[in-house]
Image 1 (cartoon, helix red, strand yellow):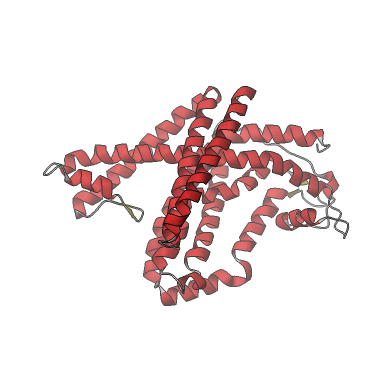
Image 2: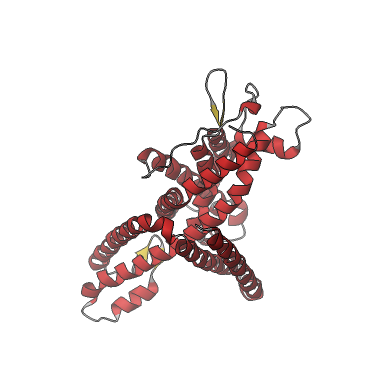
Length: 360
């Protein structure tokens, strides 16, 4: 992307962010009086629209670099939406029940289908496919916008993080940001952080199955455990029903995978510290810390026990099966867009910056 286009995109992102903030502030008095869920839902809708508009601009300004991957993204979007539409069509014909997508009833589509009296089965597949195809493209643009924002933060944050780790001395002279960085990445004291170096992976022409499985597994694990902590939390369940606590995590489910992008970037950079027996990779320490935080003190098991006794095991399993399906789809899409469109650029930019700071 040319510098002029980057500047224009930066200006457009600030304008869109200001509009998004103004809309949320205006709607606070209206939605907050109706409860937490309407307010969260409205705020998330506004943010998703902002990210979709931003993502469309990112894809437009980067069309010269991304043209090859556009065709692949379009192809898989067509295939997945067609398969999903065919599945929903079969379910509708066999059960004659309202069209339901992972717990969300598509009422507008259902009304449109039923308006074709006697011919619903004939028009169902093309209408469903068109709807799902448009929905998939919309969320692909929104995820692109979200990933672009995260990438901008990583461009400034990752070099600072690597510099803090390199200066780590494991004593009282370390400032708090440096201690926090060492704690988050579980840097062992038996290594010499000053020898930190990069072992950058060559840009991938295709997303390897090994990386795809590892990144999606991490995203689904983090998203599922985070969803359980929020929706099954005893404190929240004591003040609102399970349907509302579940909505708190199901509404923004598509953007939970963005939380793992810093670890994917550290993995691509190959940031490591040589050790006496084996090298210590920062992304592995970060992944371990994330899992530890998610399962801290066995709190999740206590929450599950309480939720099962108050909500019911069947309802929890049924609800979270649909949540995990959505999370899996968004994780796959996030991994694809990040690796295809962004990873090579951010890894190259960070490598140049940190090498100028003395990190090999």
